[in-house]
Length: 437
Ligand SMILES: [Zn+2]
Image (tube, rainbow, N blue to C red; front, side, top):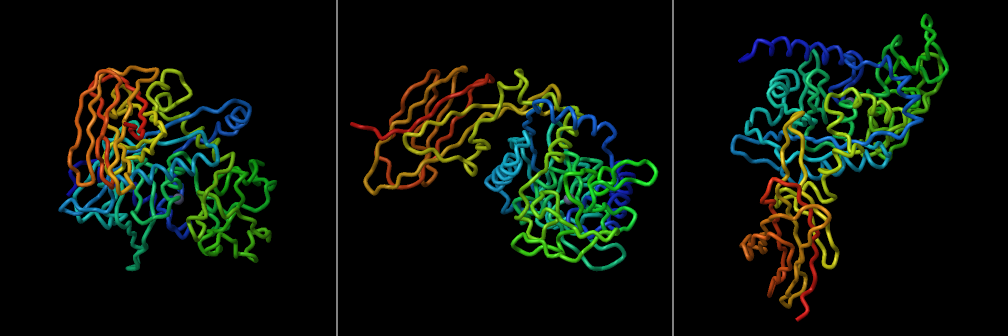
């Protein structure tokens, strides 16, 4: 049912962008950048300044929408979401992009079995229109993302897709560790390096110096992904082996030059998607350029003093038992309750931290848990500790830092939950010691 008059228009736009995309390449990620909504005109000027200046730093909140069956069952839990954020941060940090991501604690579940194996053309537009929050990247997680080949009955499964109109990402559950980073690359303005390679007039040449016939601009700035430091390449799905080696030794561009691709670029279609772990300097610059034009960019900047106060700590996301972080003996951890933007003026508070520790010895242990405030307020927190069987073994409200003794702990895993009882920013240092009697 079309509940909204704009939905029909949106579905048509969706068809247009995706249908057109199909003629360009053998797609594995529903996005080709065939509809280019970004303004690249000023990018070259931006690139020169970018290389001279210190680059901005960002943390972008990610909001997940998880499709489950009608009974609310799914293998996608808070632990899975934490892993997605950790891999996303890993791939963006190893090439020093200056961009990182945080998990918005208000992720939501959609209990509709009919969307579990999502039909790309028929169902994605409805999901994309309805499931969207402000000030974040919206990511929908489905079991499978299925696209019928145009005018054919053959179905193809996709790892993920990015919709350029709504800016929503959809990924399928079993996709590689680099899939979300790839789709986020599209959100940040990047295209596939092999874009247009199958069509003679759109193909990017291997040569970096060839110029366009009329405008005399460099072809590598106009074709493919429009970046000159990502080599021209064919769709690498068919030309790489499982060990990330290139196997298209005799594949040539339309000028007869042999391709020399990079099989590790996150935006490529390397056959084994786990090979992908790299962004080039120009890709990083383009992501910053795209961010500089985003209306939330000032809120996401972490190099601005006004935003430093609410940075997530190193153990987040840890807002529920499933994604608790481990705390080891005699190793202090500094935690904070941060905030996430929900719009330009509204925030969502992160109010809970979960940790766990293991007692490995057969003899019962007694531990001291010391909580200390650090250089920001410590006004009021609530602490609860649970044993292996989910039984509450301690509960306490604390208005000032103090030590807690946990006596006679048997072998097993214990969980600590710390809740912020105020609306203020609170930081605390937590340490677990053996309790010497
Ligand atoms: Zn893609």
